[in-house]
Length: 402
Image (cartoon, rainbow, N blue to C red; front, top):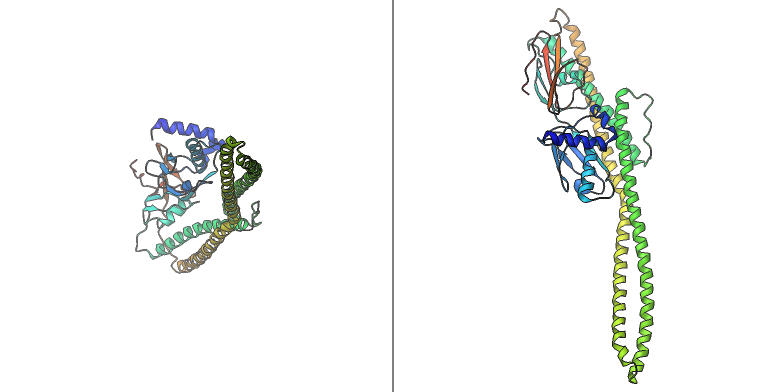
Protein backbone atom coordinates (compact mmCIF):
# COMPACT_ATOMS: atom_id res chain seq x y z
CA UNK A 1 0.00 0.00 0.00
CA UNK A 2 1.23 3.42 -0.85
CA UNK A 3 2.27 5.73 1.94
CA UNK A 4 -0.56 8.18 1.16
CA UNK A 5 -3.16 5.37 1.51
CA UNK A 6 -1.65 4.30 4.85
CA UNK A 7 -1.87 7.90 6.11
CA UNK A 8 -5.47 8.16 4.92
CA UNK A 9 -6.40 4.89 6.65
CA UNK A 10 -4.76 6.02 9.88
CA UNK A 11 -6.59 9.35 9.73
CA UNK A 12 -9.95 7.62 9.25
CA UNK A 13 -9.28 5.24 12.16
CA UNK A 14 -8.41 8.19 14.37
CA UNK A 15 -11.97 9.41 13.80
CA UNK A 16 -13.54 5.95 14.09
CA UNK A 17 -12.04 4.90 17.39
CA UNK A 18 -11.83 6.97 20.61
CA UNK A 19 -8.98 4.70 21.66
CA UNK A 20 -6.80 5.71 18.69
CA UNK A 21 -4.66 7.91 20.95
CA UNK A 22 -3.62 4.79 22.81
CA UNK A 23 -2.87 2.68 19.71
CA UNK A 24 0.79 2.46 20.66
CA UNK A 25 -0.24 0.48 23.72
CA UNK A 26 -2.19 -2.09 21.68
CA UNK A 27 -0.89 -5.10 19.76
CA UNK A 28 -0.60 -4.12 16.11
CA UNK A 29 -1.39 -6.71 13.49
CA UNK A 30 1.12 -7.82 10.89
CA UNK A 31 1.88 -10.30 8.12
CA UNK A 32 1.15 -13.98 9.03
CA UNK A 33 -1.22 -13.13 11.90
CA UNK A 34 -4.22 -15.48 11.76
CA UNK A 35 -7.51 -13.71 12.62
CA UNK A 36 -11.09 -14.69 13.40
CA UNK A 37 -13.60 -12.15 12.01
CA UNK A 38 -17.20 -11.97 13.30
CA UNK A 39 -19.84 -9.67 11.77
CA UNK A 40 -23.29 -9.97 13.29
CA UNK A 41 -25.96 -11.13 10.80
CA UNK A 42 -23.32 -11.43 8.05
CA UNK A 43 -22.21 -15.10 8.07
CA UNK A 44 -20.29 -14.65 4.81
CA UNK A 45 -17.97 -12.21 6.59
CA UNK A 46 -17.61 -14.30 9.78
CA UNK A 47 -14.55 -16.33 8.94
CA UNK A 48 -10.87 -16.98 9.64
CA UNK A 49 -8.29 -15.11 7.57
CA UNK A 50 -4.51 -14.65 7.49
CA UNK A 51 -2.85 -11.27 6.98
CA UNK A 52 -1.13 -11.51 3.60
CA UNK A 53 2.31 -10.41 2.50
CA UNK A 54 1.00 -6.95 1.63
CA UNK A 55 -0.54 -6.48 5.06
CA UNK A 56 -4.10 -6.98 3.76
CA UNK A 57 -6.91 -9.42 4.35
CA UNK A 58 -9.48 -10.40 1.75
CA UNK A 59 -13.16 -10.62 2.72
CA UNK A 60 -16.33 -11.33 0.73
CA UNK A 61 -18.57 -8.37 -0.15
CA UNK A 62 -16.02 -5.67 0.84
CA UNK A 63 -12.85 -7.06 -0.79
CA UNK A 64 -9.32 -6.10 0.34
CA UNK A 65 -8.89 -4.46 3.76
CA UNK A 66 -5.59 -3.14 5.11
CA UNK A 67 -4.90 -4.84 8.47
CA UNK A 68 -1.18 -4.32 9.11
CA UNK A 69 -0.29 -1.73 11.79
CA UNK A 70 -3.86 -1.72 13.18
CA UNK A 71 -5.05 -3.27 16.41
CA UNK A 72 -8.03 -5.65 16.45
CA UNK A 73 -10.51 -2.96 17.55
CA UNK A 74 -9.44 -0.59 14.76
CA UNK A 75 -9.66 -3.35 12.14
CA UNK A 76 -13.14 -4.29 13.37
CA UNK A 77 -14.25 -0.67 13.07
CA UNK A 78 -12.74 -0.39 9.59
CA UNK A 79 -14.55 -3.56 8.42
CA UNK A 80 -17.85 -2.34 9.89
CA UNK A 81 -17.60 1.09 8.20
CA UNK A 82 -16.53 -0.45 4.89
CA UNK A 83 -19.53 -2.83 4.99
CA UNK A 84 -21.92 -0.03 5.90
CA UNK A 85 -20.59 2.03 2.97
CA UNK A 86 -20.65 -0.80 0.39
CA UNK A 87 -24.10 -2.17 1.38
CA UNK A 88 -25.58 1.27 2.23
CA UNK A 89 -26.59 0.10 5.71
CA UNK A 90 -28.39 2.50 8.03
CA UNK A 91 -26.66 1.18 11.18
CA UNK A 92 -23.06 0.19 11.86
CA UNK A 93 -22.89 -3.66 12.05
CA UNK A 94 -21.52 -5.26 15.22
CA UNK A 95 -18.00 -6.49 14.33
CA UNK A 96 -15.18 -8.11 16.31
CA UNK A 97 -11.69 -9.31 15.43
CA UNK A 98 -9.70 -11.85 17.47
CA UNK A 99 -6.13 -13.03 16.97
CA UNK A 100 -6.21 -16.83 16.59
CA UNK A 101 -2.50 -17.38 15.98
CA UNK A 102 0.29 -14.82 16.15
CA UNK A 103 3.07 -14.50 13.61
CA UNK A 104 6.33 -16.20 14.68
CA UNK A 105 9.41 -14.68 16.30
CA UNK A 106 13.03 -15.41 15.44
CA UNK A 107 16.06 -15.96 17.67
CA UNK A 108 19.70 -16.19 16.63
CA UNK A 109 23.21 -15.78 17.97
CA UNK A 110 24.60 -17.49 21.04
CA UNK A 111 21.76 -19.99 21.48
CA UNK A 112 21.65 -23.76 21.16
CA UNK A 113 18.90 -23.93 18.52
CA UNK A 114 18.49 -20.66 16.59
CA UNK A 115 15.57 -20.34 14.20
CA UNK A 116 11.87 -19.51 13.81
CA UNK A 117 9.47 -20.35 16.66
CA UNK A 118 5.76 -19.95 17.32
CA UNK A 119 4.93 -16.93 19.45
CA UNK A 120 3.19 -17.41 22.82
CA UNK A 121 1.33 -14.52 24.49
CA UNK A 122 3.13 -13.02 27.47
CA UNK A 123 6.55 -14.24 26.28
CA UNK A 124 9.70 -12.70 27.76
CA UNK A 125 13.25 -12.73 26.42
CA UNK A 126 13.99 -15.42 29.00
CA UNK A 127 11.18 -17.59 27.58
CA UNK A 128 12.48 -17.11 24.05
CA UNK A 129 15.98 -18.08 25.20
CA UNK A 130 14.68 -21.26 26.84
CA UNK A 131 12.64 -22.22 23.75
CA UNK A 132 15.83 -21.97 21.70
CA UNK A 133 17.59 -24.33 24.12
CA UNK A 134 19.31 -21.70 26.27
CA UNK A 135 22.72 -20.10 25.73
CA UNK A 136 25.08 -22.23 23.69
CA UNK A 137 27.55 -24.34 25.68
CA UNK A 138 30.11 -26.91 24.64
CA UNK A 139 28.39 -30.34 24.54
CA UNK A 140 30.98 -32.15 26.68
CA UNK A 141 30.16 -30.51 30.02
CA UNK A 142 27.72 -32.67 31.99
CA UNK A 143 27.15 -29.92 34.56
CA UNK A 144 25.98 -27.63 31.78
CA UNK A 145 23.63 -30.35 30.50
CA UNK A 146 21.87 -30.26 33.82
CA UNK A 147 21.87 -26.47 33.91
CA UNK A 148 20.49 -26.31 30.41
CA UNK A 149 17.69 -28.69 31.35
CA UNK A 150 16.99 -26.48 34.35
CA UNK A 151 16.89 -23.28 32.28
CA UNK A 152 14.81 -24.84 29.52
CA UNK A 153 12.39 -26.49 31.93
CA UNK A 154 12.04 -23.29 33.97
CA UNK A 155 11.18 -21.33 30.82
CA UNK A 156 8.68 -23.95 29.67
CA UNK A 157 7.15 -24.07 33.13
CA UNK A 158 6.77 -20.29 33.07
CA UNK A 159 4.98 -20.45 29.70
CA UNK A 160 2.78 -23.33 30.93
CA UNK A 161 1.81 -21.26 33.97
CA UNK A 162 0.68 -18.47 31.62
CA UNK A 163 -1.31 -21.00 29.59
CA UNK A 164 -2.79 -22.49 32.76
CA UNK A 165 -4.02 -19.05 33.88
CA UNK A 166 -5.48 -18.36 30.44
CA UNK A 167 -7.38 -21.66 30.55
CA UNK A 168 -8.67 -20.97 34.07
CA UNK A 169 -9.97 -17.59 32.88
CA UNK A 170 -11.62 -19.23 29.84
CA UNK A 171 -13.20 -21.84 32.11
CA UNK A 172 -14.69 -19.08 34.29
CA UNK A 173 -16.05 -17.17 31.27
CA UNK A 174 -17.57 -20.24 29.62
CA UNK A 175 -19.24 -21.26 32.86
CA UNK A 176 -20.74 -17.79 33.22
CA UNK A 177 -22.06 -17.87 29.64
CA UNK A 178 -23.44 -21.38 30.13
CA UNK A 179 -25.31 -20.22 33.27
CA UNK A 180 -26.70 -17.19 31.41
CA UNK A 181 -25.09 -14.60 33.69
CA UNK A 182 -25.38 -10.96 32.64
CA UNK A 183 -22.21 -9.89 34.49
CA UNK A 184 -18.74 -11.42 34.52
CA UNK A 185 -18.01 -13.24 37.83
CA UNK A 186 -15.53 -11.61 40.25
CA UNK A 187 -11.94 -12.82 40.28
CA UNK A 188 -10.94 -15.39 42.94
CA UNK A 189 -9.51 -13.85 46.10
CA UNK A 190 -6.15 -15.60 45.60
CA UNK A 191 -5.78 -14.65 41.92
CA UNK A 192 -2.26 -13.60 40.94
CA UNK A 193 -1.30 -10.87 38.42
CA UNK A 194 -1.21 -13.24 35.43
CA UNK A 195 -4.64 -14.69 36.22
CA UNK A 196 -6.06 -11.18 36.69
CA UNK A 197 -4.67 -10.18 33.29
CA UNK A 198 -6.21 -13.28 31.69
CA UNK A 199 -9.55 -12.57 33.41
CA UNK A 200 -9.57 -9.02 32.03
CA UNK A 201 -9.16 -10.38 28.50
CA UNK A 202 -11.91 -12.96 29.01
CA UNK A 203 -14.23 -10.32 30.48
CA UNK A 204 -13.93 -8.31 27.27
CA UNK A 205 -14.83 -11.42 25.28
CA UNK A 206 -17.74 -12.13 27.68
CA UNK A 207 -19.11 -8.59 27.35
CA UNK A 208 -18.90 -8.82 23.55
CA UNK A 209 -20.69 -12.18 23.48
CA UNK A 210 -23.46 -10.90 25.79
CA UNK A 211 -23.92 -7.85 23.59
CA UNK A 212 -24.07 -9.94 20.41
CA UNK A 213 -26.57 -12.38 21.96
CA UNK A 214 -28.74 -9.51 23.21
CA UNK A 215 -28.65 -7.89 19.77
CA UNK A 216 -29.56 -11.16 18.06
CA UNK A 217 -32.51 -11.74 20.42
CA UNK A 218 -33.71 -8.14 20.01
CA UNK A 219 -33.48 -8.42 16.21
CA UNK A 220 -35.51 -11.66 16.14
CA UNK A 221 -38.11 -10.28 18.55
CA UNK A 222 -38.48 -7.14 16.44
CA UNK A 223 -38.96 -9.26 13.31
CA UNK A 224 -41.57 -11.37 15.12
CA UNK A 225 -43.52 -8.27 16.19
CA UNK A 226 -43.38 -6.88 12.66
CA UNK A 227 -44.63 -10.15 11.16
CA UNK A 228 -47.44 -10.39 13.73
CA UNK A 229 -48.58 -6.86 12.80
CA UNK A 230 -48.40 -7.82 9.13
CA UNK A 231 -50.69 -10.81 9.79
CA UNK A 232 -53.13 -8.59 11.71
CA UNK A 233 -53.20 -6.17 8.77
CA UNK A 234 -53.77 -9.03 6.34
CA UNK A 235 -56.64 -10.32 8.51
CA UNK A 236 -58.31 -6.88 8.48
CA UNK A 237 -57.79 -6.62 4.74
CA UNK A 238 -59.18 -10.12 4.24
CA UNK A 239 -62.26 -9.26 6.31
CA UNK A 240 -62.88 -6.12 4.24
CA UNK A 241 -62.49 -8.03 0.97
CA UNK A 242 -64.84 -10.79 2.21
CA UNK A 243 -67.49 -8.22 3.13
CA UNK A 244 -67.16 -6.52 -0.23
CA UNK A 245 -67.35 -9.86 -2.06
CA UNK A 246 -70.52 -10.84 -0.21
CA UNK A 247 -72.09 -7.50 -1.06
CA UNK A 248 -71.10 -7.77 -4.72
CA UNK A 249 -72.34 -11.36 -5.01
CA UNK A 250 -75.70 -10.31 -3.52
CA UNK A 251 -75.89 -7.44 -6.00
CA UNK A 252 -74.89 -9.80 -8.83
CA UNK A 253 -77.77 -12.17 -8.01
CA UNK A 254 -80.20 -9.28 -8.07
CA UNK A 255 -78.87 -8.07 -11.43
CA UNK A 256 -79.15 -11.60 -12.87
CA UNK A 257 -82.80 -11.71 -11.86
CA UNK A 258 -83.39 -8.37 -13.53
CA UNK A 259 -81.47 -9.52 -16.63
CA UNK A 260 -83.87 -12.45 -16.99
CA UNK A 261 -86.56 -9.80 -17.40
CA UNK A 262 -84.40 -7.87 -19.88
CA UNK A 263 -83.70 -5.23 -17.24
CA UNK A 264 -80.24 -3.89 -16.19
CA UNK A 265 -78.56 -6.19 -18.74
CA UNK A 266 -75.73 -3.69 -19.28
CA UNK A 267 -74.73 -3.93 -15.58
CA UNK A 268 -74.27 -7.74 -15.60
CA UNK A 269 -70.88 -8.06 -17.35
CA UNK A 270 -69.02 -5.27 -15.41
CA UNK A 271 -70.38 -6.60 -12.15
CA UNK A 272 -69.19 -10.15 -12.94
CA UNK A 273 -65.71 -8.75 -13.72
CA UNK A 274 -65.65 -6.88 -10.42
CA UNK A 275 -66.66 -10.01 -8.49
CA UNK A 276 -63.89 -12.01 -10.19
CA UNK A 277 -61.33 -9.31 -9.30
CA UNK A 278 -62.43 -9.32 -5.66
CA UNK A 279 -62.15 -13.14 -5.58
CA UNK A 280 -58.58 -12.86 -6.93
CA UNK A 281 -57.73 -10.28 -4.23
CA UNK A 282 -59.14 -12.58 -1.58
CA UNK A 283 -57.00 -15.50 -2.80
CA UNK A 284 -53.85 -13.33 -2.91
CA UNK A 285 -54.55 -12.18 0.64
CA UNK A 286 -54.87 -15.78 1.83
CA UNK A 287 -51.56 -16.70 0.15
CA UNK A 288 -49.83 -13.65 1.68
CA UNK A 289 -51.13 -14.62 5.11
CA UNK A 290 -49.87 -18.20 4.73
CA UNK A 291 -46.43 -16.86 3.82
CA UNK A 292 -46.41 -14.48 6.77
CA UNK A 293 -47.42 -17.32 9.11
CA UNK A 294 -44.54 -19.44 7.77
CA UNK A 295 -42.13 -16.55 8.31
CA UNK A 296 -43.43 -16.10 11.84
CA UNK A 297 -42.99 -19.82 12.55
CA UNK A 298 -39.39 -19.71 11.26
CA UNK A 299 -38.56 -16.64 13.36
CA UNK A 300 -39.98 -18.20 16.52
CA UNK A 301 -38.02 -21.39 15.83
CA UNK A 302 -34.81 -19.40 15.39
CA UNK A 303 -35.46 -17.61 18.68
CA UNK A 304 -36.08 -20.91 20.46
CA UNK A 305 -32.97 -22.51 18.96
CA UNK A 306 -30.68 -19.56 19.66
CA UNK A 307 -29.94 -20.61 23.23
CA UNK A 308 -29.92 -24.32 22.37
CA UNK A 309 -27.20 -23.88 19.74
CA UNK A 310 -25.22 -21.59 22.02
CA UNK A 311 -25.45 -24.08 24.89
CA UNK A 312 -24.18 -26.88 22.64
CA UNK A 313 -21.24 -24.74 21.51
CA UNK A 314 -20.46 -23.78 25.11
CA UNK A 315 -20.48 -27.40 26.28
CA UNK A 316 -18.03 -28.31 23.50
CA UNK A 317 -15.78 -25.40 24.46
CA UNK A 318 -15.93 -26.32 28.15
CA UNK A 319 -14.91 -29.91 27.35
CA UNK A 320 -12.00 -28.64 25.26
CA UNK A 321 -10.79 -26.26 27.97
CA UNK A 322 -11.08 -28.94 30.68
CA UNK A 323 -9.05 -31.37 28.54
CA UNK A 324 -6.36 -28.74 27.93
CA UNK A 325 -6.28 -27.90 31.64
CA UNK A 326 -5.65 -31.55 32.50
CA UNK A 327 -2.91 -31.72 29.88
CA UNK A 328 -1.23 -28.55 31.16
CA UNK A 329 -1.43 -29.78 34.75
CA UNK A 330 0.30 -33.02 33.74
CA UNK A 331 3.01 -31.12 31.87
CA UNK A 332 3.56 -28.82 34.84
CA UNK A 333 3.90 -31.81 37.16
CA UNK A 334 6.40 -33.49 34.82
CA UNK A 335 8.50 -30.32 34.53
CA UNK A 336 8.45 -29.81 38.30
CA UNK A 337 9.71 -33.37 38.81
CA UNK A 338 12.37 -32.81 36.13
CA UNK A 339 13.55 -29.64 37.88
CA UNK A 340 13.70 -31.45 41.23
CA UNK A 341 15.79 -34.24 39.68
CA UNK A 342 18.11 -31.76 37.98
CA UNK A 343 18.67 -29.97 41.29
CA UNK A 344 19.47 -33.28 42.99
CA UNK A 345 22.04 -34.34 40.38
CA UNK A 346 23.46 -30.82 40.14
CA UNK A 347 24.38 -31.02 43.83
CA UNK A 348 26.34 -34.26 43.16
CA UNK A 349 28.26 -32.64 40.32
CA UNK A 350 28.98 -29.42 42.19
CA UNK A 351 32.55 -28.27 41.93
CA UNK A 352 34.70 -25.85 39.93
CA UNK A 353 32.73 -24.90 36.86
CA UNK A 354 32.79 -22.39 34.07
CA UNK A 355 31.34 -19.07 35.10
CA UNK A 356 27.82 -18.35 33.87
CA UNK A 357 28.14 -16.60 30.49
CA UNK A 358 27.28 -12.94 30.53
CA UNK A 359 24.75 -12.31 27.75
CA UNK A 360 23.43 -9.29 25.90
CA UNK A 361 20.05 -9.21 24.20
CA UNK A 362 19.07 -7.14 21.19
CA UNK A 363 15.59 -6.96 19.67
CA UNK A 364 15.09 -6.02 16.02
CA UNK A 365 11.50 -4.84 15.56
CA UNK A 366 9.69 -3.55 12.46
CA UNK A 367 7.21 -0.77 13.13
CA UNK A 368 5.49 0.29 9.93
CA UNK A 369 8.22 1.21 7.46
CA UNK A 370 10.79 1.66 10.25
CA UNK A 371 13.04 -1.04 11.72
CA UNK A 372 14.66 -0.48 15.10
CA UNK A 373 17.28 -2.40 17.06
CA UNK A 374 17.17 -2.02 20.84
CA UNK A 375 19.24 -3.52 23.63
CA UNK A 376 16.93 -5.10 26.22
CA UNK A 377 16.99 -7.26 29.35
CA UNK A 378 15.87 -10.85 29.90
CA UNK A 379 12.55 -9.66 31.35
CA UNK A 380 11.60 -7.58 28.28
CA UNK A 381 8.45 -8.65 26.46
CA UNK A 382 8.82 -10.30 23.05
CA UNK A 383 6.30 -9.43 20.33
CA UNK A 384 5.32 -11.48 17.25
CA UNK A 385 7.70 -10.85 14.36
CA UNK A 386 10.58 -9.79 16.62
CA UNK A 387 14.13 -10.92 15.89
CA UNK A 388 15.95 -11.66 19.17
CA UNK A 389 19.75 -11.60 18.99
CA UNK A 390 21.63 -13.25 21.87
CA UNK A 391 25.29 -12.24 22.26
CA UNK A 392 28.01 -12.82 24.77
CA UNK A 393 28.90 -9.59 26.51
CA UNK A 394 32.15 -9.19 24.57
CA UNK A 395 30.70 -10.05 21.13
CA UNK A 396 29.90 -7.36 18.53
CA UNK A 397 26.28 -7.08 17.39
CA UNK A 398 25.14 -9.44 14.63
CA UNK A 399 24.03 -7.70 11.46
CA UNK A 400 20.45 -8.39 10.41
CA UNK A 401 19.58 -7.58 6.83
CA UNK A 402 16.53 -5.22 6.78
